Figure (tube, rainbow, N blue to C red):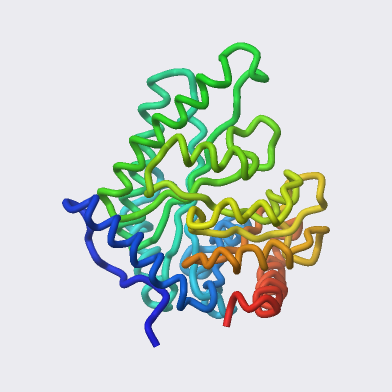
Length: 309
């Protein structure tokens, strides 16, 4: 049976448009035959509990995860740590699917901050290519000063312009950008409606959507809205919450009704991963139990809807 995961280790620089087009055609062609998605973990769950990088990677594989998302700033990584992440993932047969990047400076009103932020995201894109990852998960910022000083349309246009620049860089490197939908009132992208509008304005296939189920719940976005992201979503985050505040809890500890969202995601036929996002465990010393619980409950949910086989 043909694999539903891309061939790793192919350098795509120098033939950007041709290669990205081929990648997108491959994605469309394989959606029809890809039965399920991979189950991954964002490794910040371990780092925030003080666990060693190599230990966390090994434990991720031991628990049964298919893939891993890396939360690490390339500007802060030492050369040794940078090599360690890839070598340990390779040693444990754990593909890196995504790198998480928070880049609120992309919408800053200071041009110098914007320039630095663009260069910083470029470093993430280069690291993604080095790690043979599929995408960089990009978190944009929020409207500043309650939208009362700088016109919101100006900040929106700034974000679009900088993402267009980064989209071309991503295409040159053969990776994509998965744009995060945040659940906060002043976030630029905080609904399916604003996600679709932002993707339309950027207008480049290298920039697509990430679906965060907990964020959708907090933003009161119904699962039926996800149909608007058909062909435009490439990655998924999953966690639970209390329905009122951002929580990133193991599924089952909050109020999120996962099945309608997962059914809608299954209908989108995304060739990618569902990555568990756990932040700031209240009991860091029991982080292994926290992650193991999240793995069990998430795997059960994916099996129930036929998203992981």
